[in-house]
Image (cartoon, rainbow, N blue to C red; front, top):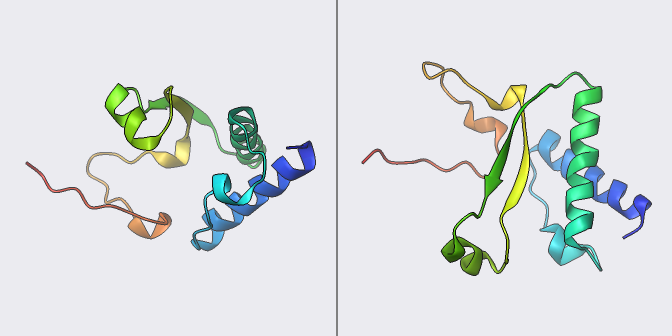
Length: 108
């Protein structure tokens, strides 16, 4: 993907976050999307959010087990950024309306 296509993909995802209207996975809609493109799209979004006042508070790693990687059809873990508006104190309710596909967990 060229820089313009990456920016357009970042715009699409930003719009989904703002409107709470899901979009098709980029892997299905962006021809030639590579892992490097996906991480650059992520960084574009993070740079925009930081420029708008968000602060990076940490990082996350997912798909660390071989079983989950097989299930998702990937061969390595993924990673991302955690921003200050992604955290809640344990006594605060989490506003599920902020999420596109919130999941409820059942305590064991």
